[in-house]
Image (cartoon, rainbow, N blue to C red; front, side):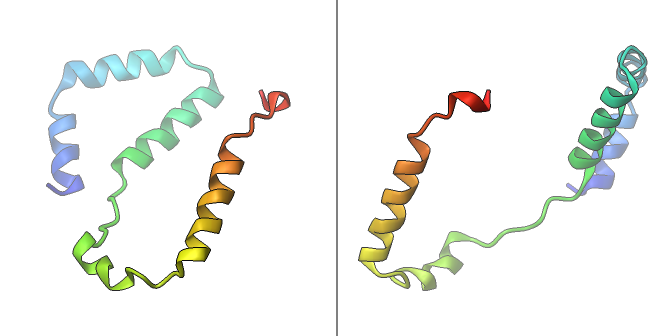
Length: 86
């Protein structure tokens, strides 16, 4: 289904549109801008990916030792908690 089809269906529900606008009116300008960015992101066409079958040609392209180093770096980096971030 294309994004234009999705938009037509969403715009076909006046009660939903009215409720969204009512809620939007309650927000400050920054929150309204955030909602606009969200709406644009939701309405944007999604890029098409490739099937896993097409990616099989890359299997084995990275050496096993390199993969282990990558996995270790990810594991070490993801297990750290920086309490000052929050």
